[in-house]
Structures are given as structure tokens and as C-alpha cells.
Image 1: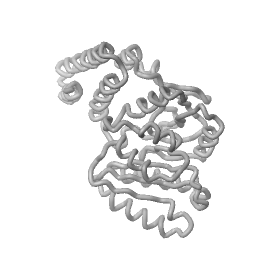
Image 2: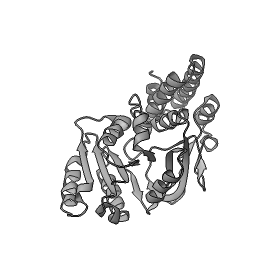
Image 3: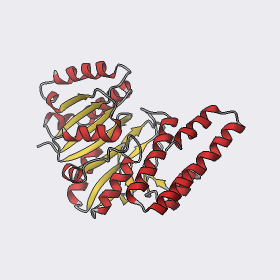
Length: 296
């Protein structure tokens, strides 16, 4: 029986994706051979020759008699976004647990096995997030508080240090990053997966929010090493625009109308300030970025 399905979504990150896959194969060679682990890669119609590189890598892996059958490559004809692409990968997964792993990560140890053991032994745990490291070895703040109005306000002020964190011990947390998120397949199916209204960003927090509504907790698990290159498949403008859209959709789905209006006002206020800064500093990029962000 396959214990863990590692699902990697790729979009224009051919070299990073290859490095990610190879790091998984290096750390979990025995589990791949014993059919306890599988790798599923979904390419979202990349335009950087990822299709050719991943096809060649698939042939190389399939040539291995013992571990080849535990690698699946799915090549989409369009960019489905993160949420929908991951859901598509999950539908093809056979594992008891699903691990959503960003293509811009490198796996440094065998901590995923300890994560599955934790979920086996803690039935109240619905989602488990792993520790992410910057390329220089410092921890990334890869989990945090749900964006209620107060924490949204702090985040927009640039005080993410008060909103996001990277615990040094196993700890309950509101949400964890989708760059390394583990969940039981049955629970993922019960939640109908990621909400596909999110193209990219905020979908991880929203999944943890729905999991809590079902009475299960999200935990942060620091005893795993994963190097993460942020914005590996996007850029700052794309991120800000989709974070704004995602926050508004989250509020429209889960909060009352007054809270939605306050959140919208906060987002617009932050954007207008930065548009003004863009004018004063002759930064057309800053102006355009936040103009697009508030085109709701």
C-alpha cells in the first residue's frame, strides 16, 4: 500500500522541478522501491520547455525496474492555477496521505516519514505543515494566524512578523503554507480539496480554515528540512494581485458583509497609498501593480 503521494505542481520551473524531484528520489529511494511512496508531477502548460525536460525525466525514471512505476507525469493543456492543478494531482493519487510540495523546493532529509507517523498518532490533526528554509538556511515564516480584520491590518502595515511564524517545536497553528502541506486523502476528499476559485495564494489558509470548521487542528512540524525558493513560479506583481483577490474571496465566503466591506476598504487604502508613493518616486511598476490589485 502506498503510504504517501507527493504532489508537485510545475509551471515554468523546469530546472527547479527537476532538482525537487531528484531530491525526493535521493532521500526516499528505499520507499520508492518498496512502493510505499509515489511522486506525481503536474505541469500546468509551461512555456519554458518543461514538457520536454519532464518527459525525458519520466523516461529515465521508468527505465528503473524497481521504482519507475511510482512516478506519474500529468501535462495539462492550460494553466489551471495552483488550487485546481493540485486537486487534479490528488485525484490521481493512491496514497493514504497527500503531500503538496512546491516545485521550487529541495528536500534535505527524510522528515516526511516522521510527518506521516505524527498524523497516524494524532487523530485530531487534520493538516500538517513542514518547516521551510531560505537558501541561506534561515527559517521562513511558513504558517500563521487566519487573516481576521486585526491580523489583516497588521499584514498590510508590513508587520507580518506578528502574523506569520516558524515554530521551533511541534505546535498548533491556524494555517500552514501550501509549499509543504500534508493531509489525509480521505479528509482532503471530504473537504472537496482546495477551493478552485483561488488561482494561486490564500488557498492554503482557506483549506486550513475549513478543516478547523470540521473540528480538526492544523499543526506545524519543524523536524523536516526543506529549502524553498520563494516566487519560483511567479513574480511580486502576480503575487500581490492574487493575494488581494484571494483575501476578498475568503472574506466573501467565510465572513459577514460588514467584515467584507472593512477588508475591502483596508486593501484599497493600502493600494492607494502605494499608488501615490509610485507617483512621487516615479515608479510606474509600483503604480501599475497596485492599480491592478484593486481592479476587483
